[in-house]
Length: 284
Length: 135
Image 1 (tube, each protein chain N blue to C red):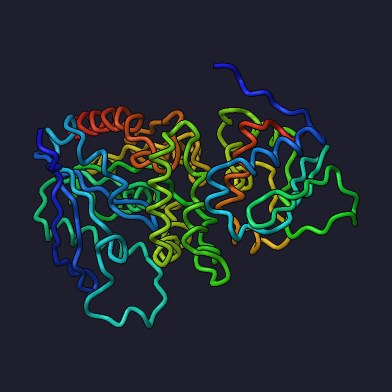
Image 2: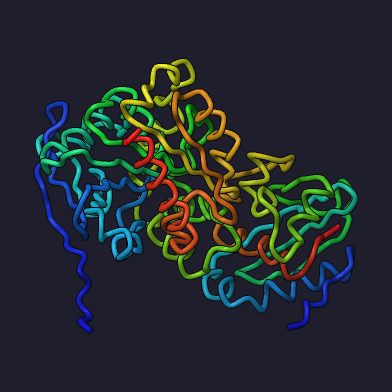
């Protein structure tokens, strides 16, 4: 058996809101595109096991990109970004994802994101219901205050360790130690982007008054949340799903806020259920 | 497999906690600059934990109001701490961030010192799963 993974990496140039990005993505599989957004302050290795999950890649082209300023996707090519504070907004996050899907010429993609990716999944369903075949909002909610903190970038503390150990409790004790430590390691690499990402997650993202405007028939929504998630609890996601037309909520046992990264083996069964639910909703 | 012996609250717990921390490979590998004193306040019991260069050098049980200076405190009810002492804690008993966001835990005092030592303190608190509840 070849020791070379079937997962390949590419760069694609994407323009959004006048900003030009050279975006790195990993992909594997054939079939309906499944576009995967990592969590705030992290990168696409969170999807490492999904990218090699043959049951899913048999029917899906799994695309896991690094959001600009994360992993191998640089900050914008055409601005002096170092002269501004990075604060991600819902508008720009949504416009970027749509521009990425356009640049890759994806037809009927499913969008899946976790944490701030789960939140933007709801924004996409609200604003671009016809661009996506459906969205999977993992660890998402209508509103998730409380994490836009100065500690992530405090110059008197080790920001890498504060970010990494600050999110440690978001994972379940049952998840394999090696996978939790990989997730910790990824978080030690992203402190400069983490706080700016959380501007979207905890400040700019607020759909409490807009959930009834999401057309879950045009763009079906499935939400999945782990019981060890202290930021977006299963109750938060259930409340959100209840208010969205035709949405389904799946509670995940013995897993936390980074399900695909902390324990893909447990997450995959819930994901397969979610994909099946989405398919049923799409064909209905 | 037999369950590890758990220490009773008070002096036994303090000694077991110090030993577990000082024998822990992760803390010993990464604790070169882990130096601080903090109060673990479990309502019915409390402990002032002094750490110097990664080693617990003193644990004062139930310190009086002015006995031991400490830089920050981690306070919670007995119920919350008892959850931390389970081998596999229930959701929201599984870490100081989780219990602060979703239960009655409070992080007080000079939080910067907590953040500066967050990696090792996170590990120390996780050792309660083996050492048992402090209360």
